Amino acid sequence: MRDAAGRYKSYVLGVLVLVYVFNFLDRQILSILAERIKHDLGVSDAELGFLYGTAFAVFYALFGIPLGRLADVWDRRRLIALGLAVWSGMTVLSGLARSFTHLAIARVGVGVGEASATPAAFSLLSDYYPPSRRATVLALYSSGIYIGAGLGLGVGGLIVARWDAAWAGTTPPLGLAGWQVAFLSVGFPGLLLALWVRTLREPVRGQSEGLAVAPMEPHPFREFFRELAAVIPPFTVVRLAMAGAGRRTLAANILAAAAIATLAALLTRTVGNPAQWIALGVGAYSAVSWAQTLVLRDRATASILLRTPTLRYAAPGFALLAFVGYGLGFWTPPYFVRVHHISEAEAGLVLGGTAAIAGWFGTTLGGVLADRWRERYRAARLYVGIGGALLSMPLAAMLFTTESKTLAYVLNFPTLVVVSLWIGPGASTVQDLVLPRMRGTASAAYLLVVTFIGLALGPYVIGRVSVALDGLRPALLCALGADALAIVLLSLAARHLARDEAARVRLLASE
Image (cartoon, rainbow, N blue to C red; front, side):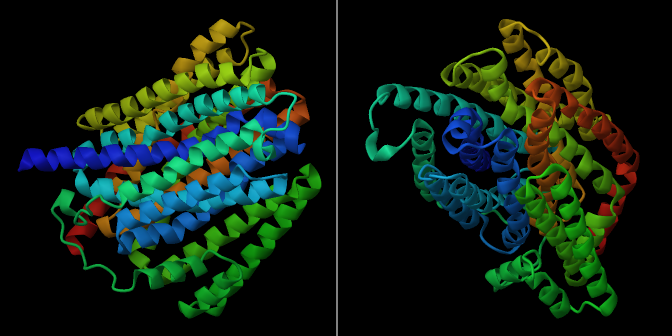
């Protein structure tokens, strides 16, 4: 019986890894198609960074909050399956885009759909597997990032090269360019995978820790729409008032909106790209409004998420590692195309294969090391993040300064390994510090920080610096400074971890 249970949870993990593979395949394929899209739609590097990062990330992060809440009160299998169907459908629509605006809208839809997967998957897997294996399991799940990213580069490069070569000098079917066919080719299979995910079994919440939890919410979508109203302006103010906010809280909300709007206007005037700063401004204001609502709705969850020192340092620390990871992940293929003068097909094959293998190995290794070392060092998961940052800076610096294409290919492998070490430890650190009933919400809040700093800013900032300095190489080298700041923040988090874990144990005993 125990063997059957063990095989089944491994099966669930395998299916969810496949979901995450499609999650990042649909997301990362834009990288290898960037040069063709730039040519066909007439966009700049900064706009490409916006398409890959901000247009996707802001809505991914914001909808992750209500969808994370839904994961805490509804069937997580259904939620993942529904989100998979949505983002796959929007990927198909990306393949039908005929302008920058149309493609941006489709990428927003992909972000909304993908926001459903990870909070629900983190929560579900944390109930299937005990805390002693949590970093390893969440790392294995997260390895889908690099498998999907690698497949996105390989499949995208192959399709675009063969399609455009086959129809060179003639009108292709339906007038579709190779990059559009690539989107269509990876979007349709996801719709079939959604049906498979729906067949999984939902575990009992808290079972991995022997905890009894409250019964399921009888009206889960009522909770979802309440949480959605807390992050979508102008409903944010109404939701605050309904939650019992006083004049001081409402005044603070309005002042935050004014300050964020002023900053967005100044950034737009200084560096241009109004869509970037408007989107980030809306996201920042929505995050502030949601945090205010959470304090009124669920003080215990708000206290843990907003006042736990380890989380206050660790979340932005891991997010800065994501800044480097997302930035390098998106811009490395275009860098090789421009600097080493290789084709998209070669870049997709070599860099995609490297990303899949090195990323899978690094993510898995980070989780295994974090769990094993935690038996001796309480802050081992944070130390793995620090170690990855220390190693990535010299490796990436050599990768982006060598003139040898062969050496660059070789260096890309260890760079991807160390850049990905933090993913499992980061996710498990959050899960270790919250109660089972809070896991979906906590995961969504963590992903909001990681997504805003890592994905919304990483690719865009590198693209913007590339425009300013007239080259990707100096822009990529500048991005490595985020690793140094991450080391400082994760070191501070490690100092508070023991005290914060003890506080969680006391809170568990009191519930």
